[in-house]
Image (cartoon, rainbow, N blue to C red; front, side, top):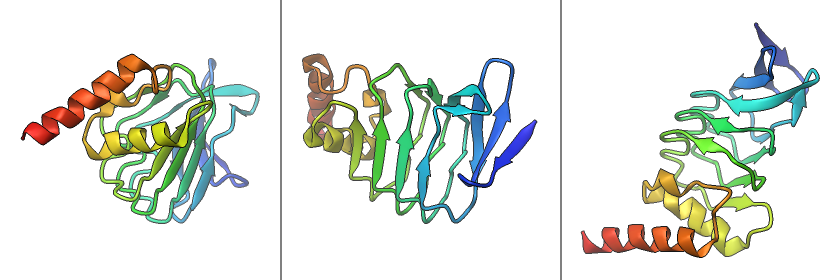
Length: 154
C-alpha cells in the first residue's frame, strides 16, 4: 500500500521486509531519504521515483538503500549534488540521465575529486562506474580512464 510522508514529501510502499520510495512531491528541492520508515529499513528507490523533478537540487541516500531504479533521478534539471554511504548499492540504467548540472556524487570517505569524477561518469554515459564500494580505487580509476580514452578516440 502506498503511503505519504508529509514531513519529507515522499511516498513509500511498505512491505514485510522493508520500505521503498516510490514518488515525491513535484516541487521538492532537497531530499534526505531516511534509513527507516515506520520501523522498516528503506531498501530501494523505485523506478522513476523522482523523474523530472525540476527543482530538486540535493539528494542524500542512506546506507540502507540497496538499489536505485531506472531513471529514478533522471531529468532533474537542477540536481547538483548527491551523497551516498559506501555500501553495496545497485544503480539501474539511466538513474541520472539528463542531469546536466550534476557536479558531484559524494561517497562517504572519498575526496571531492572522486565526487566530481563520479558525476562526470554520468555525463559520459558510463553508469557502470556508479559503484560506491569501489569508487576511488585503482581498479575503478582504470575503468574511468578507459572510458575517457574511448571517448577521446572517437
